Length: 402
Image (cartoon, rainbow, N blue to C red; front, side, top):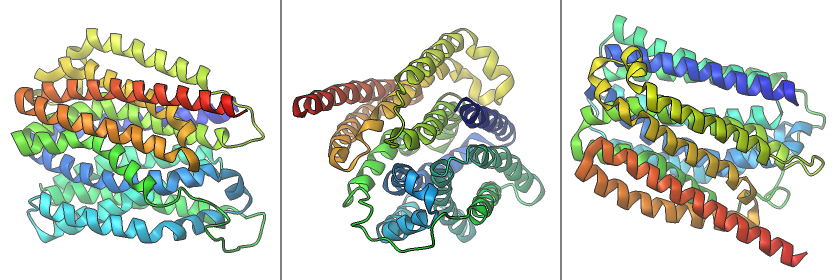
């Protein structure tokens, strides 16, 4: 177990270093308005990624024991969700078409491809986690984080200084990761012959509840970017996106890495694994980092990003705090990823999304980037309070029933 955890989290740390290196690289060569356009495409594409995670990836991890015996179960789970996910993909592509003012037809097609590949990527991550391929999962993360920014910079420098070039670099990195996932898939020999399954065999979270949860999770993570772009323009979004990439996304990626590591174990009835201690240790460490960022934010920005982004360095620690609270709430919600408690999770996420919408819209209008950061902090506090409250309520109900 310790070796697996070391490989899993070591891969995350190395991939986070790659992401920070990539953000630093692009922030020195790409203007804030172009960075804002890229951020907008990524924000929209991540909607599909989040829906796939809630509707499919969590189901894969829930049935990890069965998938370890027969890898084709994962393929059948994909087949069972392909129609609603295809509808979501088409809807999101249409939203992208009408929301973003694409400069060319090529840029638009590349954005659609990016949307699709982000969904494939999160499904690949879930499969690697379900079959306990910790080393392959670490390689997968590092392929994406270490390749996408350098490839984007190469295309930007040597082909065309445009948004399409950056998108092409990102897409190529995701394609390499998808090929790697397919190679791992082919290399696994199932213990049982290939067989079809029906919804009665594996009760994936029924209906469209997981898709709604995915939308609310995305909304509370990315609506702030849509709001700042619509109210203050793409150059302000570009500055905010750099802040998010440095202070927020490494923590969120850690949270997802922890979920991918813990969920298959939590759903294993043969293992009595209590993850509270691990969550407390990780959260305590992250709060210590918050204190460190309070003292060193100017120094960090002086060498990490371009000069036009540095005046907002003082927001680094507060955005980091928001991410810590959000990550802790997400890990705490692991107990809700069961068919009979999914509506509780939908309620938690829906109420948080409603608060997030109100605070972000108001604070973005009044205080721009500073308002967005503190709106995120407010929503994250609200989310963790709701998660703890409903988690405690469910525990009391279970105790009463027994």
